[in-house]
Image 1 (cartoon, rainbow, N blue to C red):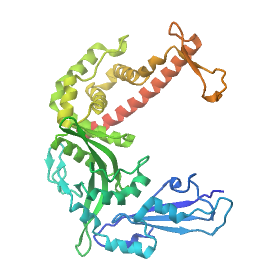
Image 2: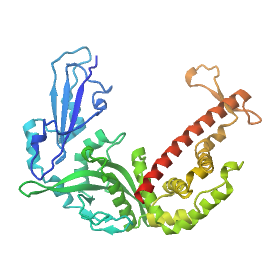
Image 3: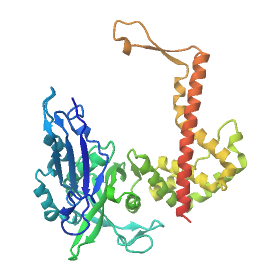
Image 4: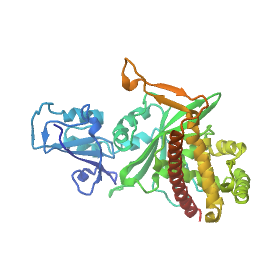
Amino acid sequence: MSLCVSVSFYLGREVGGVSRKEEVDSPDSCCIDPIDLNKFFEDDGKIYGYKGLKITVWLSSISFHAYADIVFESTSDGGKGITDLKSALKNMFAENLVEKKEEFLNTFSSERLYIKSVISSGVALEQPTANGRSSDSSKNSKGEASDFEVFKVAGEPVGHLYSRLVPLVLLLIDGSNPIDINDPRWEIYMVVRKTADLQEDIGINMIGFAAVYRFHRYPDSQRLRLGQILVLPPYQGKGYGGSLLKVLNNVAVSEDVYDLTVEEPEDSLQHVRTKIDLQRLLVFSPIQNALSAVVSRIKSENPSKRSEPCQYGPPRSAVEDVRKSLKINKRQFLQCWEILLYLGLDPIDKYMESYRAIVTARIKTDIIGKDSEVVGKRIIDVPTEFDQETSFAMFKSQNGNVTGSESDGAKSNQEESLRQLVDERMKEIKLIAEKVSMSTR
């Protein structure tokens, strides 16, 4: 039978330029909980043959080496063998796993300059200010000293660096798979912070990173796609992720690529991304006249009273201007445009009915409208000599309609689904709009 296992995962936080092996076993270290390690054990994700098993994993933020402290009361073969824990952990951490604790502690001193050596082959990037222009990488948007820098690592060093980051990707980025380190089009953007110990020995720690893929776009352009982004848990919620996104935007603009996209962003990432893009769009003059014109139309036409939905999207010229200048792709711009309308309809309470009608019409077209082609089609079971569960026939009624009860049920379900989608989108829009409004005051 499988056993319930206590797993603790600690990220050592070296805050000076010297070894901080004292943090190992310290209650003040950063415990990352919960971490689901089941997928790394056996085919069924279970551990067999142990009683009172506890696994404590320590991961150095200096060199990304790992050490696993395995404690258990006893072992017994209950019919499914005894899980080889060391082999499973080796699959997870690969060459990063150090078997002996003393060897792991020694890495805090022997590898303390690892990050410094990596960025020595990279390029320091300028950080954009609030107006989107570049500034010295040691200054923030207010001209004050910044506590971080961003370096671009490309070419051969990417493979060696990323091989050490793979455990962080597998453990801390939901649903992620390692990138192909043999593909030279991958680039790593590292957020680092310089620190000094009591002896004034300067060290450099990694705060987070982004993996970006550089596509060729015919005939002579490039596109950037953000594949993975991670801020280490001790530094999350402090604005480092947003700062890294701003740097990537600046790279896209300064290199004049076609656009910058994000691969399947999680809600939290998309939220930050949209907020940043809205701040850029609010001061982007080429779209202001078009935005004002659409807002005026909404105020005068009252879309909620129209039987047929009207188009309140941006003109094609605005979409192209935004892509060319800000490198925001069309899909992302349309998401932002919807929120720009919300911000423009002031006071929003007066125009909420009209605005909700616009959002409803857009979602209905984007989501439910795609299913219109199946209206009038029905699937029925048919007698067969093959597998009954996988055998069926589809037919379409001659007049394209289904029976009344089926039609009413489907319509009711669609309306409820639409209402839920609109409610979720309206909540999201309001939240982002409030944050953007606060940041621009």
